[in-house]
Length: 197
Ligand SMILES: Nc1ncnc2c1ncn2[C@@H]1O[C@H](COP(=O)(O)OP(=O)(O)O)[C@@H](O)[C@H]1O
Ligand SMILES: [Mg+2]
View 1 (cartoon, protein in one colour):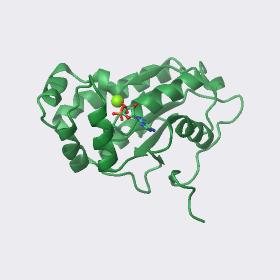
View 2 (cartoon, protein in one colour; view 1 turned 45 degrees about the vertical axis):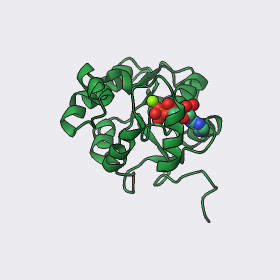
View 3 (cartoon, rainbow, N blue to C red; view 1 turned 135 degrees about the horizontal axis):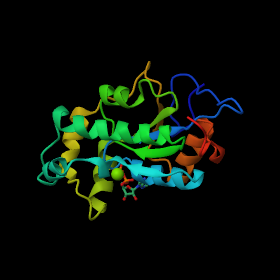
View 4 (cartoon, rainbow, N blue to C red; view 1 turned 180 degrees about the horizontal axis):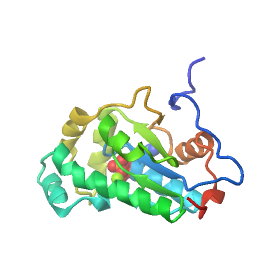
């Protein structure tokens, strides 16, 4: 049976945490710039009462300057940034605090770096077409990411494929519906807040 429109497929299901054994859950919302990861991530965090970190805020100043100047980031540029994102995930987990992060995680190696060995970590990838993204980005003001950099984002993008265990959703879903989907598919609940790691 085909998937409902706008609802992507993960590979396999996500285990429902056993009652009494809930650990902190760290949900990373990923996708290219303009896919809606900050919007959906913040909304998801608000709905669950969990803290939210936007990985944009974890870039070294040199990366932000480079993006502002219209230059794409290299793997080497992204290394300290990914390490900072992973460190933030570990801080939440160590505090037993469930949380949501928004992070583009364009390449499979980046996603593996964030997910490998982190039992409570889950990733949602917002899939988007280039045309839709360009229109959205041009309408967005006051953000450091110029629309021309979309080309480099798509050049770097490695869309999640099995066996990666990632929930893929269409970014055309209204944010509220995307949040409903994420909560339902990943079995999230506010009660996962402040559990022991
Ligand atoms: N599901 C959606 N439907 C329509 N517009 C959206 C949706 N999600 C985000 N937007 C809009 O698209 C733009 C980019 O969203 P944003 O969350 O900043 O993306 P990202 O963090 O992935 O770069 C914003 O103007 C936002 O309001
Ligand atoms: Mg963002």
